[in-house]
Every structure is written in structure tokens, then in C-alpha cells.
Length: 146
Image (cartoon, helix red, strand yellow):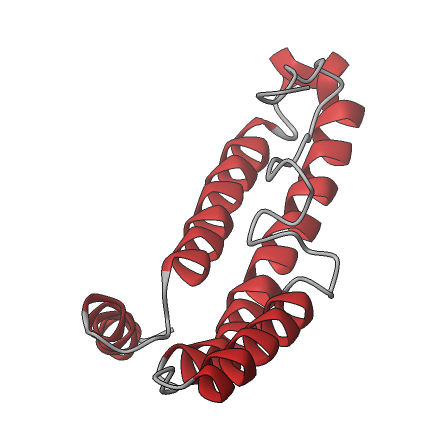
């Protein structure tokens, strides 16, 4: 991959993120950074894999690498899904709500859009209800309110 092309595309994304535009937004950015985080985990796994001194962990490392690779792809998919889900909602935010009829219509459309935005089961960019991926056998700390 040519470095300059990537940096130009990355800068375009960051410019859009910094703008007043409704998308990309926080969910998209969270998904991008989730993909980056999992890629860094994969880097560590790949640096560990095949080393004699870590040979007893090789099977676990391979399982973790597979899980991280899948998580990275999920985050990439969720970045686009977040933008697509939020676009109709951003249009509802711009609707007039001066009369009772306009307020009712806006509220109804808002409810429809919010339901549709969460209907893919992703529960946000994290890809799981609590927004975390577990990639090892380590116990998960309970989320707030659990």
C-alpha cells in the first residue's frame, strides 16, 4: 500500500470526522479505533508466534490471532454500518417541530430510526452488548449495573 494514498484517505476521514457533518461520528471513530486496537493485538501475536520460548503457548496464540482477525473485520464492517444507520436519523434531527403535527411526526420518525439503527444486533461499534471483545480465557469484569 502506497503510504501517501493511505494518509490522504485517512486525512479525508479525519476532516469529515472533525466537521459538522452528521457522519462519520463517534460510533464510526470507535469502530476504527477498535480495528486498530485489534490489529495491534494481532501484531503482538504474530511477533510471539513461532518463537521457541513461547512454544507452549502456540496453540493459544493461534486461537487468539484468529479471534482478533475476526474482531478486526467486525469493526471494519461496523464502521460503515454505523454511518449508514445514523444517516436517516440525522435527517430526522433536522425536521421542523413547530406544530403539534410536526412534533408528532418527528417523534414517530425518530423512534423508527432509532429502532432501525439498533436492529442489526451490533449494539454500537463494539459489536457486543457490553462493547467489549474477549479474546482470551480471562474472566470478564462485570459491566456497570451487572
